Length: 204
Length: 195
Image (cartoon, rainbow over all chains, first blue to last red; front, side, top):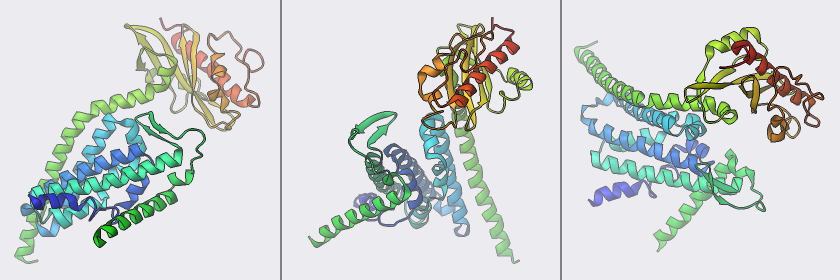
C-alpha cells in the first residue's frame, strides 16, 4: 500500500515531469496562456497518460522487446485520438483554442517516457498510480502558469465565457506575460520557488 | 537470414498487427459515437452568423441555390458564401444570404436576412478594414441597422439612402453594394418571395 502511495506522490513534486524531469515543456508553455486551456490540456494529457500506462503495463508480457516502441506509440495515439474526438464533439471552442496541441500529445515525451521507464517494467496498479501522480504534477504546473499568465497578462481570468476574476481598468497588464518569453520567465520563476521550498525541507 | 530471425519477424508482425487492429477497432467505435455531435457542432458554427440576423428558425443549407447564384453573381457569391433557408413551424419564413463584397482592405463578408423581399437584418461576419475607421461598419451597430427594410427598389448607394461611416466611404459602400447584391440574389433564386 505504501509503495502505491509513493508511486502516486513521486510525480507530483519529487519527479514532477515539467519542473524536475523537464520533459514535455513545449506544449506546456504553449497552452498555459489561459487557465482554461491549461486545465483542459492537463486533464487530456492525464487521461492519455493513465490509460497508456495501464495498457502498456497490462500487455507488457506479450510485447516483444524489439518492437515495444511502435507498440507504445500505437497505444498512445489511440488514446490521444479518443481525447481529440471527444473534445471536438463536446467542447468545440476549447478544441479550437488548443488546436494542434491535442493531437501532439502523441509525441509528448512525458507519456512515452513513462511507458518506457515505468509502465513497461511495473505492475498495472503501480503504473496507474504513476500516471495519476505524473498527471497531477503536470496539471498543477499548467494551472499555476495559466493562472499567473492570464491574470497578470490580460488583467482577468475568463472561464467558460465568464469573467471569474477582474483586476479592473486601473491595472495595465504587461502583455509580455502571454508571449513565449513570458512563459519561459514564469516557468523559471516557478522552478526557483520549488527548489527553494524543497531545499529548506532538506535542511530542516 | 537464419530461421530465428525469420520466425521473429513473423512474430513481431503478428504482434503489431494485433495491436493496430484493436486500436483501429476502438477508434472506429469512438468515431461513430462522436461523429454526429461533431457534425452538429460544425453546423452550429456555420449557422452562427445566420442565427444573429434571423433568430428562432431552423436553417437548411441550399447549396443548389448557391451554385445557381454563383453563376449569376460571381463577384459576390464566391467561396464561403451560402444561402440558408429559415423555417419556423414547418413554414419557410425567409433566407439568410452570406456573401463577400470588395472593401478597402479585402473582402467584407456579410450575412443578410431577407423576408418577403425585405431586409430584416445585416451583420458583418468578417472583414479586413482599417481598425478605428472602416472597422466601424461592424463596431458601430447603428450602421447596419439602416439597411433594415430595404428592398430591390431602393438605390442602396452611399450619400443617397445610406449614411456612410465618416472616413470610411469605401468600407460603407462595400456593405451597401453587398446588401444590394444579396437582395438581387434573393430576387433571382426566389423570384421575390420565399412563400
